[in-house]
Length: 306
Image (cartoon, rainbow, N blue to C red; front, side):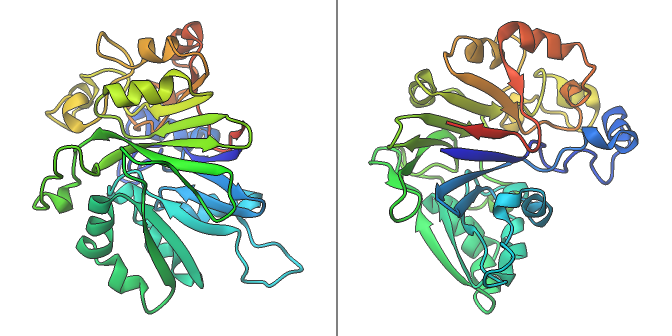
């Protein structure tokens, strides 16, 4: 199983266009600190890839990843990108779908509430229909078997419910039924040919038992690192809510995820860093704390082979 980290930033990216905080100013002065919106690409079958979450940066992310570009010498419009898997319906994970309108066809895989919010609530179904043949496929239910990403693929995908948090634009949408398809899911990707697994959870508002079961024996876990501590949104001055109240478990502290990751056996990385997170500065002392725990901060462009 081959994966490419296309981006590692939370909504707005780093730098954020309307922000002059220390981290954003530092990223403008040092372009190597820039981070695109969090996304991951996985090769389903040789030469056919799926992107996890379609971010506002998707065109740039494709250009920065040679495996996702159309190959010269073939049909000039034949793209390796077969589809998109959505972990949730947030704008920073779905706005890139409109950017894919130039494609002849592509597939969108999502849970029922996410599909309805994006296809019908955002209106992307009607918007894209005149441009591209878009197939909306259901992400396997939490209590059902996983499914291959594409026909003939040894890489299988399953959703792991982690939160019922709805995006603001879908606040009037009905609550999912107990045990039903989630608004926010982690993805468990399993290569049936090798038995290797990866769990990807860019938005993690809780650490339920099902998620612990999913990561307990995973070979690689990439999780939500939006905020360093629970008070960060308040101390940064952009929200009156804590990190947890905003739907993101913090990294540090008694309810943080760092000590949970440290106890896992596989490779462990953080993604989805907010521009206020000190980890966007490579010289921040918080990096040493993670190194001590054996936990990494994913970088844009990281390749993972499992």
